[in-house]
Length: 286
Length: 282
Image 1: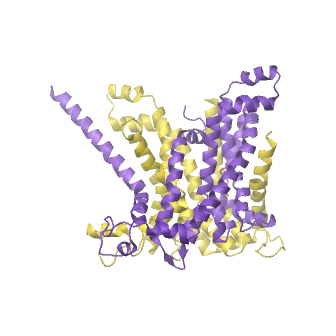
Image 2: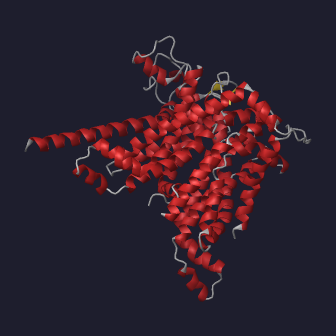
Image 3: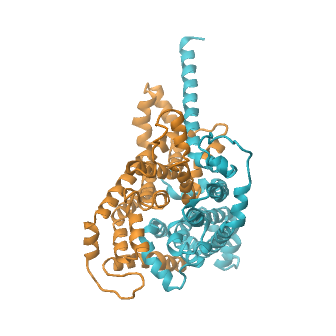
């Protein structure tokens, strides 16, 4: 083995070490709050608030007390239910409106379909913090203030644009001849859409379902603005704003709630990630 | 088939968007139905208020600092994540959590980590003898530290998103180009800065545009960690609009403050259209 080969191998080993160092630092740093939620959830209160203790270790046996308190004495189960219900309804409205719109855009001839798709997508960029003040009046005029229905009605305004854009990409990849042949065989366009297009784009539809549902759990500003009673809240606002009694933070239960509200969503979202990214990059990477 | 979706979005995005302007040039308050046109009065009064100027400055600092950190961190992370290795899926999941978990929930986690008394960060710093034991840093109570904290927590939240977008760009670069450069004698960093990064510019552009929108218009991290405090030192435009328009019931002035978000958004939208157009042509 000559010296050049050895130094090349040495350099490669150094490269691998640096790479793993960076990976370890980033993944530890980025996931640290979740790790910390996990530790806090199972620690006894007296252990948590003893400043002499090493906070990374359990000085007393772990406890389920915080979880019990969370599910028995707080509105947390209610918030989970509210979120699930609002999420389901928002997903339903989104699919009902975005599916036909995306299909129509995908089949428009010329560049206009693409351009209108982009125009719809851009409305997704209009932020809640620009619209929340007028929308609070609109919500009041509809008689929906302080009700979970306010967000059921408003959330599709940002799930529809992105979903339409994503679905449009899916529908475009389906050859037009498929429906043409079916329509020659006597199906109406709607039947062709329902029997041919929907089954082959199920993965795209599922992506939109997951995306819309996670957006409902993540949204904060609208829910904070429109809903004032704790019992009508979603998890995203209920936990950080209403799980505090007076000025007292129940950190154990609070962190338990955070853990339950974030991990499942994170896991599911992760499965569909690549498709969302394809939607965000406008095909500027191929 | 298009009409229902377009009407829905027009009713709940287009109409409130116009209403925001109508409010901003009027005198609407919560609980009153009267409306008088007052011209640019609200904008004038907003521009004169010191808390608005501070919020505008904070918004710019907040956006610029966090986007610099995000672009540097995101590119480094994308670079080490791009090739397949054992455990990549697990690491990708861990790295993505801050983006996919609800941001309000992640922020409350940080509030506990940065707690004035039980902060684990301070515990580590004290035991490493980096800060004095009896006066540890007040992460959310000191104006400068509070600003640094909200910038870092927001960076923590949006970094994974930028990383996955940049990752799409990094993996799309054909392997043989950097290899050819190496054969021609270009060193690693020369290849990186003169070949690879210029090839990545379009995708860096996309990541940055989304990053700016998600940062400049967001108030969640700030609302939960500091409520704009101490003494408005971390107040940004969206949170000021919320405190003025919703909690302070002055809808007109709140709407006027939000409208200051618009110039930047228009700029971003215009850049995005150009990117999309180039992808369409190219």
